[in-house]
Image 1 (tube, rainbow, N blue to C red):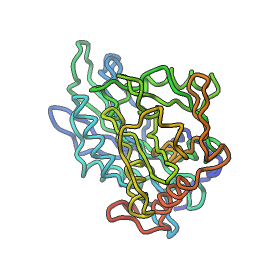
Image 2: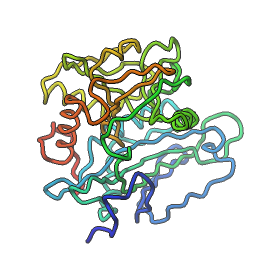
Image 3: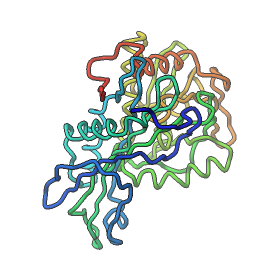
Image 4: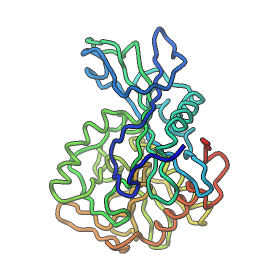
Length: 341
């Protein structure tokens, strides 16, 4: 079948309805067999648990067209595992890993005409999500749930592509110690909306959150992990129990060490160290890597030596290598690339 008539180069990062989505219902202690459906609407009781107590979690991954014409996804097994961890933390039933991967495969295959062509710069974004669906008025977990997957073709997450961005140190906390920062809960993102809008109103692209306990260590942004590069080309990523374990970050660490031969450190990063780094970037599924050129701490500017014009050299190599693996230019580690068709 032919690709849909979409202006792939200019679609932006937004929702475009595709033909099929996947849904499975949990009731009486078990998931049903699940199915692909065409109706994008969801009808729920007004007292559904997701509305009252935000019992919901989600994932995000992408499907690509490789140079040889295959449609693939990147490490969906890790998304499945992370969603299982999120569900467990939120007292939701876990959707089995094998079923998750199978559901992703079926949903992408059914929407193959919406997977952008190779070289377009666009991808098919895949959003698995789960929520409590039965009425709950007392504070307790739901008894019934829906697991769903929607897809939408998207362009670059940050407008302007890889041009370095300016971020600010936020006065708000993203996650508390022993809280839910390490899982992909919808409630984490709800509380970040005011902080990101405040950043935008003040002329910044994103926030840098510090640890809630001491406000001395770097955590992450509202939707991405940090990567730093020292002046001797060591790749450093913050380590904390309240940081979401980004699949992109974990992949970058592997690429740095095993493909580029770089030294890697995963450790707590004090904010007062940031001024000494040579490069900084944000990494996640949506942006892959977005370079940071300037960090502003209440008027005090930290300008990264890599500058405001382009990615620093190490982050550029990391970006090129990881996207090369995703797109089929570079041989991937075993199990990283899941072929849909």
